[in-house]
Length: 517
Image 1: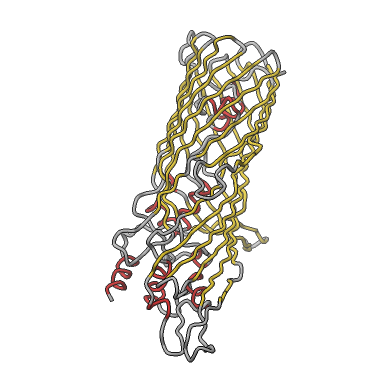
Image 2: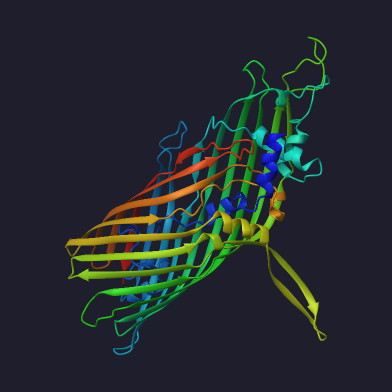
């Protein structure tokens, strides 16, 4: 009885912090990473005020206004996860990270001196991840059973209904429930994730008297996410074989649109010191979610040759029909300020600050229709907000402060040495957990129970560069450090939740080739 009282309090308390779709949405849309040209990455991306790099369009659209020559560049990279917890410790994912150009047109000696047009394809985020989290001392059965019992048979939860269909809560003919009567003795969990967020930016920028620079960027994002999870749980002694498994697949695909405005100024006419400001609108995503799951139990409600009511070790699988959900996602506004200074022709230094309130992320569902205004039928379309999910997101995520700094040193005009550092604060509040009972339409489609609370990110970069009269080449190395607390599910019976800390560190090497004309 005590465990159901605890469950009721947890579910009905307004202060309980809950997360499932919130954490998944945060994982696919959180941009706490650094991608772009090797020069941009090598300087830690702190080029929002320094400009004159095609990837600086990510930080400040006005950065392209500092170009005085046209350019084209391509960037290739390879990423390796530091600790996959798997046998393959050396897997490297090669990728095409950036490709873009800037066309610079002089327009006069006074006033508006240059008008520039730019396009840049760039990876915004890499979602690829593999990890194993075994023996977390938390039981999936102990998560599902109290939820099922508390809400009764009419509770429409995909995972609970799936478990029931596979016989997880079934009894033998002698009335014995094999899983209820056997204690949890261990589990295995593995998840493999693949995917990316790719951006396509179109930019218009200008240069006024070499002191004021402005820019506008229209961006289109392509999002792809695929995840496979494998879970096995063991109950009782090894010889009992009262084990079961739960596997699930999740896929998210879609596109998003965003817009950025930026401005750079030299406050002092005799100084190269520059300051920048940029505003990025929410990215309006239209996404499609697809989920599949399968429970496999190992018991049979029949007899065998050994006698009546004896356990037969036979797999009883049940696969859920694929479920799909069309939904919209609005990411938060982003605000950036930056500063940069050059010392002669040898040293350039840049810093940048960004604020983003991830708790302001909103989820909804597309809608369309038409109405008659007395003269004609007018079509309407838009998105209906999921208020329950928005409330959950606000309670689960928080505002994040991010900081970038970087420098470039040229011992001789043709060669450059670069270094940079980034810090991204943690977007997840402490104490959040999964909850498949909130009054949200999306909970009917969820096939996974696990979630991660992502920690803060520290990122160190360095690089080298060569620039001739027309051709240039840059090389950069990036080390991204991040930890996460992984929960296979929320255990309503436990006073303290058991988690496994994951190492999400990554190494990346980038090579950029470019040509100026």
